[in-house]
Amino acid sequence: MNTVWIVLPILILLMFQLGIGLDGRAFVRVARHPAALFAGLVGQLVVLPLVAFGVARLLCLPPVYFLGLVLVACCPGGSSSNVFTMLARGDVALSVTLTALSSLITLITLPAVMAFATRYVALHAGAAIVLPVGRLFVQNIVLLFLPMACGALFRRWRPDAAWRAHDLLGRVAFPALMLLAALFFVQYARTIVDHIALLGAASGLLILLASASGALLARICRLGEAVRRTIVIEVGMQNAAQAIAVATSPLVFARDEMAIPAIVYALVMNVVLLCYLRYVRRSFPAQ
Image (cartoon, rainbow, N blue to C red):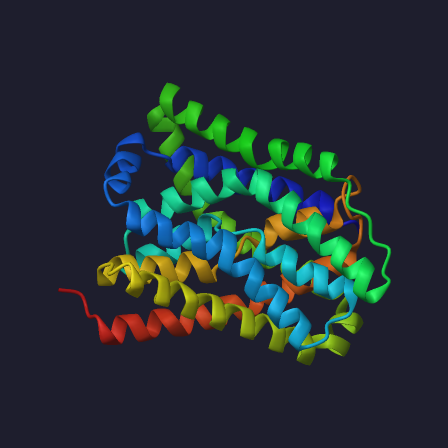
């Protein structure tokens, strides 16, 4: 079974849902507080790839897993982060805005960072892994930008139907991602089990360092507590579906094993963030 034909529809639906959730008025409100946007975008687009490089080098990951971990770090956000932000009593408008902006900006940054990463791996590990940058850019337009634009237009033309679709997709998104993870795990169970300690450590380090970086950026920018929680979640949560789509796509890398770090990351990420939610609810009870 080629999992790419499962992950592509899931990613398109997730980005369509994100497009429905875009609110021009929320953008305006968030734009009045540029420090929060700065902290979130710098954490997602600059700090995360640097942390991933550091973790991959520290643990001496094999080339294909090295690129897989960096790829995860290049795919920030996702609609699940908006749900976690709501559960953590964070700033949902900021979360949606950061998810949308980072998804658009990664149309440029993802090919650039991955092109550098493939050259780095070829130079230092002798692994000849080729990245067709043009194809990656086109795939990101089709899988990210167009579904978001269609979702925004659907909300504009048919708002009531759009919100019903948004709620439905919100209920099925997480189970769909877990189904994808389960299918991928079954297909590559032996490989995942053989490397679970290494990739689990890499994923855990990446999540913890990313979340800590987000908290530090929020503190430096003197942001409020709810905004800080939002930044921690947005910087710590990555779009595993997008990473899997890039890794397994026959138009880009066409390497299923490169998606394994994203699967392990998704599992570890949910455990870490559920623990974070428990901490938040105990430390900041509802008023």
